[in-house]
Length: 240
Image (cartoon, rainbow, N blue to C red; front, side):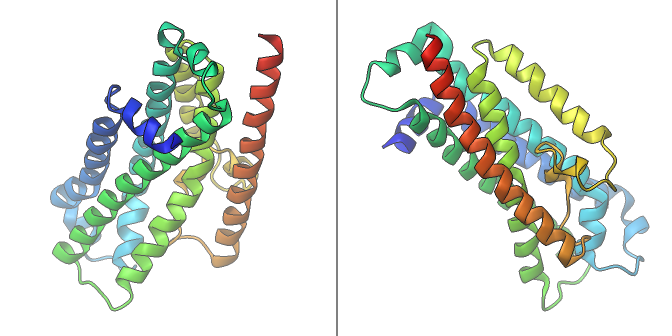
């Protein structure tokens, strides 16, 4: 019920077209890069997946995170505009269900974006390299890993947006967090666990033990941020 309601409200915001256009833009990054500088990559000894993800994923991940930040702001802007959130509280709908409905919707659109990007990587491999026997399994693992690491970012972006009635405030905080994440040292494991920094990690270039550490950390962050939102809702309600 909550998800269907969120889908209906999202139609008025441009949320879905924004994600689709953003996904196509991010998917164009490896294609354009290979079309312009293919001679730099074709002769390398690494696997095609390692080459493509290593050279393109930082830009693609940044676009994905910016999409999540902008999408979260759009979803909550409709709630705070014209006191819509206060009107929703008069209905038999929990505020937490609204939040998690938006989380599910944003997660689904993130899957769509990652699927478009995966198709782009597959096209690049088939056109400029050669698809090996394990390529599809490797592709699925890599983008499944990326999706899991993106979920804490989705939750934190929604939490910030739910806390700020002014969309420009939450958007500004999100953009600052994104650029802060790009400046964090990549070799520091603890700093790389910042929810806006974890989506920059690449499964194919990471040792299995370290990749599992990121998986466990992402799951822990999902739980912690989800609980933080529930606490925040109760605290804000007590002051209203």
